[in-house]
Length: 210
Image 1 (cartoon, rainbow, N blue to C red):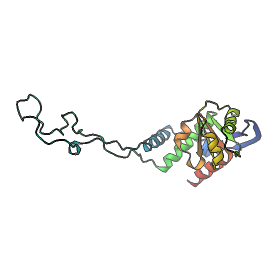
Image 2 (cartoon, rainbow, N blue to C red):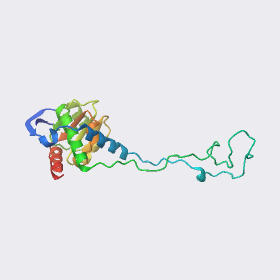
Image 3 (cartoon, one colour):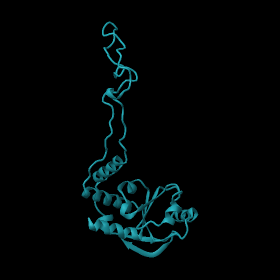
Image 4 (cartoon, helix red, strand yellow):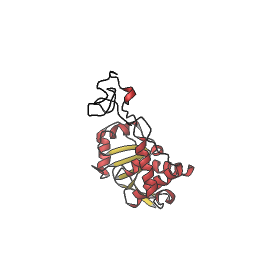
């Protein structure tokens, strides 16, 4: 698949980049995408929720009610779950939500996501550029030139320079990613995926090493 290369002014450079069919033109596997996105979101959860059980409650151990004749349940302690402020039965405990996904499944999922973007026309290849100074106005002009204003977009560079990163961080709907750290959620959670020429080469190299 050939894609026209644009510059930061939004104009065609007259060059075309050949995208590898084994990365941007595979048969999409929806289930692999689902599993990978699910695993990514699960890994973001802290899992630190905790409620106190009966043995962790600090209350008096004096018998507050007589054993029989009250018409209610027998409870010999104010720590009982039957009493307001008592311990909780089978409450949540800290644990990890991480799901194990095989490397091959992750690779298939990422290729499927990239293929979807390419086939739907939501993939843009951008000429490599670097901003000399950190100015939000400069990067906002790039977004405007590419007709991406108010469009959820992810810019992927081979190496993200500090000036460009600082210039883009205050622009809504724009996110940055390094080609080596690009994950399945970043790809699927955006409308437009903008890859620099260096990022395309980096992605193809990373997949060839897998």
